[in-house]
Image 1 (spheres, rainbow, N blue to C red):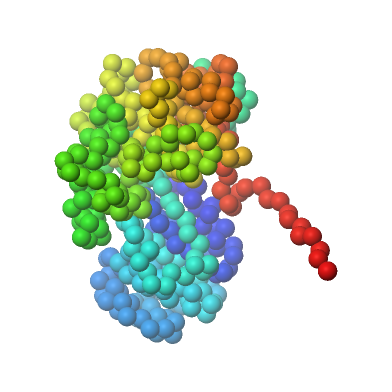
Image 2: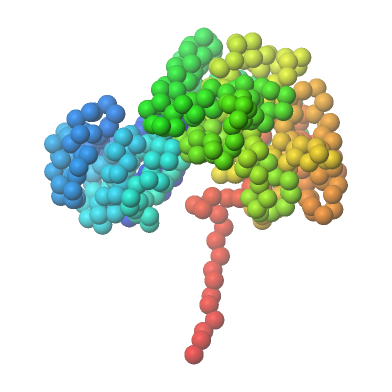
Length: 458
């Protein structure tokens, strides 16, 4: 089993002893079911698991459940596991097959006999249409492909070695040269392999043979297309067209998604739900333009002008000729691979909980990403893949604009840790400590707390 950061969230949920049900969402084949099953083995005496895709009878039997007692009776017929009050985890996998089953969750939690976990892929907007979603009775955990740090763990790198990177980035001191060069290679390898557990497993098992890895990646791409056809329903033709255009649009000069690539008369207001379905299904990562780089960024975003990245950079690499993957791994600087490096950092930022924005101004130019820091400050980020990592005119203009009051910008490149004026240069592999390096907002489970005391009245 690969070590996954999301497992900590699942353990925190288990510590609350069934106060809520657990819903783990994310794209297909990223390890959701495996983590829940592992949690069940570690923390519960028995696990009653039902997979609604593999077990067609289960889908039929559970489709018209009328009450908690009815559900438990039917579950006992479907699962061989012993149902022990207070000690059983009931796990319903592939909940997207019966999203309306979520309406029963409130009653199941209040009943209190068992703990309940659900997992789903390609949900898109399915749960939004549930007539009575159990708000307050579900703990939602979104999983993403393995990040760079998890990839390093899977390939045997020790935490204390990776800890050196975090210490150097925090102190803004160079990483030792021997480690710097090695980790640049690890990062380029991660871009080619990606973070889908099956692809990483193939890489580890087959000694780095990329034929095995790309076979897995290609199969995953095909399965995504099949799932879009199945779950997007009437929107499937448009959603599939968007998915198929994604690598073409990223490879284009501007990298912005051109709607006329779908249809000469296409308009965003007619296609917005199709794009949102792909994003909600955790297949695409949408990065909207911001014209005024002030917090909150969402206040000035233009959702009709955007870039669309893929959720896993390894899968994206597999959709191009193998020469792209080879150029990434060998660090071929004659090939323009900027779109691949942008994609891997879009993936990293989203997995840290960031909303994606980029800056565009005709006079000042374009900055790859804008995110918001822990104090709400705007953090501009440039990703450099080529020979001139210190050439970032748009970022310089942004930092020089007093009205924006941006204190510091970041450039990720092949360079070691360095500070020049208001620009911090960090190596690509600093992605393994991205929240700390950028001063990003912390998650709800880990953020610092404070106490509010209301004034006494009367």
